[in-house]
Structure formats: C-alpha cells, structure tokens
Image 1 (cartoon, rainbow, N blue to C red):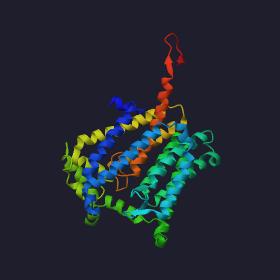
Image 2 (image 1 turned 30 degrees about the vertical axis):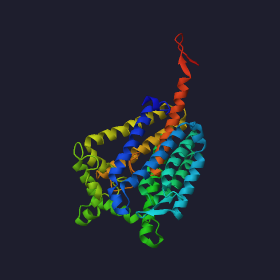
Image 3 (image 1 turned 135 degrees about the vertical axis):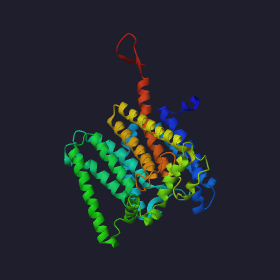
Image 4 (image 1 turned 45 degrees about the vertical axis):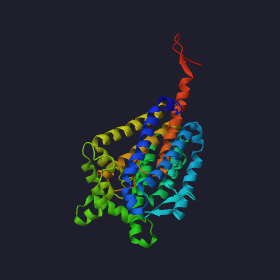
Length: 395
C-alpha cells in the first residue's frame, strides 16, 4: 500500500478513505440497482460499468488537481463561477428532465449526464472564499464588502432553487456560515436570512395566486413531501411509501445486516443507489457498519478542517472549511432522510452513491483539499530544525 501511496501527495488519511469508499461504491452500486434494472431495463453489470467509468474519471480528476498549486485554483475561481452560471442557464432552457426536474445536461456522443448544480455549488464556494479574502477589510461596508459577496450567492442559489430546493438551501446555508466565520457582522447575515424568508413567502404566494406563471414548477412536490412526513393519514402513508420502506430497511438490517445482495426492501426504493443509499447500506451491512461509515465521514471532515486551519492562507482555510462542511451536510441529510427525520430530498451519499457529476465534483473538491495539503507538506519539508539553535533553518 505504501508503494502506491507515495505517488499520492497530501493527506494520506484522506486518500485512504477516498479509495476505500470509491472501491466500496462499486460493490454497493452493483447490489443496489435491481430496482433500476426493473424500471429502465438492462443488467446490473451495465450500471456497474457506467459507475466504474465515473469512478475512474473522478479519481483521475482528483489526482490531476492535487498536483496543482492552490493559487491557480484561486485565480481560476472567477472563471469557474461564470462557467457555473452558464451551465445553470443552459440547463434552465435545454436541460434533460428526470423525475420531474430538469437538472441534467446530456454529454454528446457518450450517453452520460452531468448535473450542472454539482459544478456550480463547488465553484461558488471557491469563488466566495476568494472574495472573502479580497474583501476582508471591507466586511462592515454594505456597498463595498457585503453585497459583492452576497450577489454571487443569490445568483447561483436562485438558478438552482427552481429544480433543486434542498441543494440551493444547503449551499446558501454554507455560504452564510463561511461569511460568519469570515467575520461578517451577524446582524447583516440575520437581515439577509429574514429577507430571504420573506422573499420566498412572496414568491410562493404569487405562485399560488397565478399558477400559470409556473414560478416554482416543483412547489407541489416540496409541499407534498413535507406534509407526507408530518401527517399520518392513510393517504399520506401511501404517498410516503418510499420513505417508510427506507426506515423499514434500516430496521430490518439489524446489527450485522442481511448480507451483500440479500436486501429485499432495496427493490422497493426507487433511489436505493442514491437518495436512499443509507437505508440500503444499513439493510445489507448492518448498524455496526453504519457507525463505521459515519466515523469515516467524521474523520474525513476532521482531516479537511485540520488542513484548512493549518494553512497560513485565508483562501485555503475558507475553501477547506466550505468543502468539508458541504460533504458532511450532504451525507448527514441523506442519513436523516432515510431515518425519517427530514422529508425526502435529492441529496445522495458523497463518494458512495451511484452518480456521475456528484461523484466527479466530490473528488475534484477533495483534490483541491489535497492540493492545499501537498503545498503544506512541501513547505514543511523545506524546513529543518537546527539542533544548535531555536530557529528553523532551510535546506
């Protein structure tokens, strides 16, 4: 293992966890796709091969990015932000609709799809991290500090919210948390949150009063998911069958699980390989494995935070904090949905669930973290302690 890890620079723990999860995703995806085979046809091997293709692309992207200096990532953040807007606008007008949401772009000739919001949310976190450094002495100014930071957040989240409310809400929360950590006055953040709630209420009122405008095409879906999770009427129980099956799958998993490929309820979960991944995982691998999985995500978060806080570059610190929080929230929401705490959303498990753009962009994000870690390693390697003095001397 050490022989191969020497080619992977940066934080070895992150590399090991990433490689374990990517490898395990191949096993779990192959096991969790029977429902997809029933709905769309084909064989489990077909979906395994497709997922394997994404795993290879994701790992290559992570490896390539981790070799680059993080200063170039900062310099390209503005381009990434505008590219994210362009992709979201293209998706808005020409996106491929799946499950009632037009979130995907079909890649020509190869038959693969890409979710533009996966790229846009990482691009926004990186761009906001750069802006916070540029505006660090202007945080108290509405015109020169606060609004230049908020406008990019409003633009990206506003373009995402139409088809993916949960992603937009999570991204908005993470950006506000970054601003708070960057010492933006809490009063300004509270005012924005209040204004956002009022604005959303007005938009919902307009949507209900003038349904022909179709301002929120997935509003009925959002409303039904919330009401189904809160009410126990027979009608709502039928409508919320997939969420109940997800909870039953967790219950039936027990301590050690049903065994790989032996889960039964996964065949009744439409997104057993993605949105309800955690339920399928617990059903087949059990509660002990579930705790190990949670521990791995927490270790991943800890290592990312440690890299960010060890950096003497504010951009690197903010970028690591944003990426770490994003990964943890996505995993947490998937678990909370599967356990019935949250209503059904479209958040899958980072590094494990079947998917293309989500998996690739997660590895890209980790590649950025590893780039920062590699830079720190190179800096520390250039310094040795002189045993005859209290100062550091350079090689």
